[in-house]
Amino acid sequence: MVTRLLGRTAVLSALMVVLLAAGWLLSGHLVAGVHPLAVAAGRTAASFAVLAALAAAVPSLRAGARTAAARPWAVAYLALLGFVLYYTGTLLGVDRIGASRVGLIVSLLPCITFAIGITAFGEKATARKTTGTLLAAAAAIAYAATGTGGTGLDGAVLAGAALAFGGTVAYALYGYVYRARLGDLAPPAALPAVTGAAALALGALAAAAVPLREIAFEDWVGIALLGAALTAPVFVLAHELILRRGPLYTSAVALLVPFLVRLGEWGLGWAGPPGPVALALLTACAAGVWLTVREPSRTTSGRRSATVATEESTP
Image 1 (tube, one colour):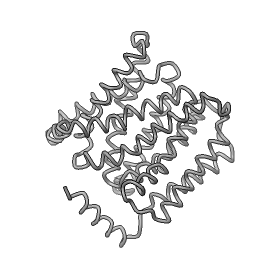
Image 2 (cartoon, one colour):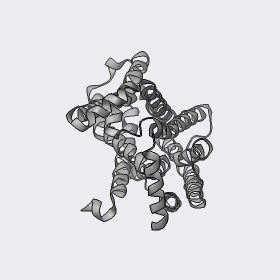
Image 3 (cartoon, one colour):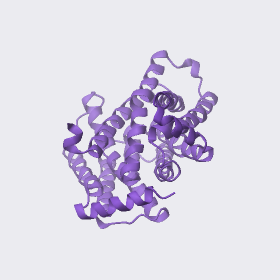
């Protein structure tokens, strides 16, 4: 009933945003006591276990999973961009400058995706998308300047920001590469190979850098919960949205996440309530996201749907 009233894409988008926000909150809690590489490796391994079990249990997904595994270079490239570089950069950034600042850097993903799309992948820059992306980015930057209460731009802050920004650029590229290399496969079929490769790579990095035996059992439980209950469903939802509407739409919707995280921190008692300026910037950011992802007119939408269908059916 909800899907019928709001539309499948809207429901998938809202669910992805809620799960992403919950994942950020749990990640911030875990990174406070566990090395970021261990969190990255553990959550990816737990996600792989869930996605692999799903693909094995559903006959229609098995062939797709075998097809993805037969494309090792694509799998390796996607594992590097979307997991190794993204998780390493953002979680190491959280360890240095905190989840609030990293979340705001990640919130600029639509701007990065937009720039990559028009410069490297030939996407068209409409006035509405440009205005919406710039408005949302300006609101995010202003929120960072007024609401983080940071310690200044010392070396640690700059290093953490560089790590988070690099990871965000890698994830923006990942969206386009995924659509080009594995876009012909259903996300639940394609993701086991990618997450499996990423889990192996991150596991090797974590084993070399972190004394894993010293991590408490309850922390491993939290990491497993993060990967299996939050990260794995988000993978499927995000990749489904990438195929339905493209990387820019998916990135723009995800722009809401750091602000929901801020409200979640307030609700959990980790921070005070956002003030009037913060609320105004939240509203401006939401307006920018709406401009970026708003559906075109029915006539234009029909033309666009036909074009997308033709492109996706072309080998």
